[in-house]
Image (cartoon, rainbow, N blue to C red; front, side):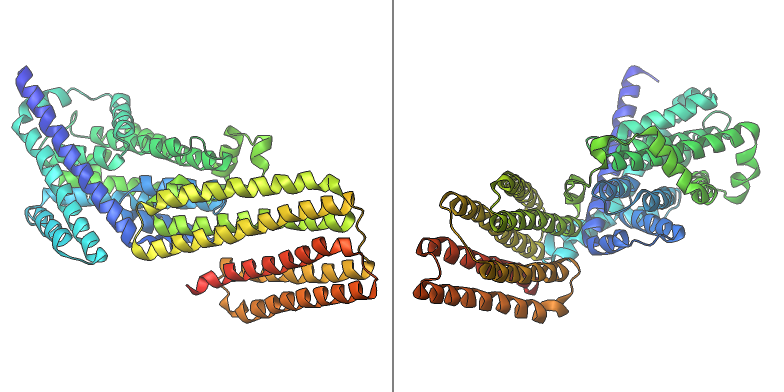
Length: 542
């Protein structure tokens, strides 16, 4: 092969690989967007049954055609505390099984039917251009992506057929199992797609090329791709919490142990391929795809009973630092932005976390007022500042999410904007209570035990209102709405009762006139707080 021929071969090979990856990206992105609610339901389950979690991981990966996407999502869920490491371990094993579907699709390129499948590109593009409905456009993109996968494989295979003799001379001398193993690791880590590397190997087999003696050699590359595929998850865990890093480590440990186990078998049994898959499947492409599936299914069966050991090993390798023992500081994770429904679910939880912070600030400020304790006010200010920072993080996340969201999702985005505004009003009321406490202490204002008892009752009603609001928002328990509205009416009644009683005491000369400004504003703020909690709960109706 001359220099010019080598350059042309590489250009054709890279072009085919590029078209293949574009096809996979189109297929993955659009299936994922069409099935976001289904994916959300699958990952939202908290079943501790290992086989159920394996099935969820396999089904999700088979659906979206990318173990990288699935594993990154798993790392993201672990990072925000939605999923524990035991669930993640089983799902990662399932994801490895699901990813073999791509190789099975690639193996179809060995059959004449692929010529017709390539026509799906034209049909899909026409659908995407002509159809008005978003779902039909995405279905068109899925068809186009499927067609591009086969076109990319065809381009790679044709490039190899044109230079078959030259390439064969190179690869027939590559027989070192460890070299082939590391080639698989390196190529997969480079392109961050085991599907791409496996598909290149399948394209070689379709072109009639063999590696080494044509025995187990090609299988060593396939084993290497499984370790290389861990790079995506490892990269995604950078900057994440300790448990997210452990989930990535479990993925690496599982794939490495499985690959080393099978490599030992292949080394001890040189005729493995000839005695098994070569006899069962006439097509070399099908043999590679079937081995890939067999490897991952077998490893899952062998290692699933020992999933707890994988978790313990990850905990030993990645030690828990003092600051990581605290609860996850945020539910927001950039990995979720690719799926609007997942991101919105996390935003909802983060908004309620912000509400917890603001409400804690208010309750502390009320405690400070009742106890005339200005020492507590610094803690209140800290909670107000923290709520403001969380609010800013939510707004930034909403802006990024809006860039890729649909109209129906935009309505939810607008709803979250509204809720964060109401939550910040709670923080502002806490800030007002700081002022009331300072004025109470500096001006030596006196409030009777009876008044303070009535204020406690009103705040107790607000606490119950807050709990009902969270039930409605987080648990979707709309049956609590009548009870919530009734509690809000109680808060309104308390305001009227407290102010009427205060005016009566003023008229009788029992109460200090200088306390009126603080007392009336304070009670009005409590009534406003109840209104804002009710507004938040009623956003579910929109």
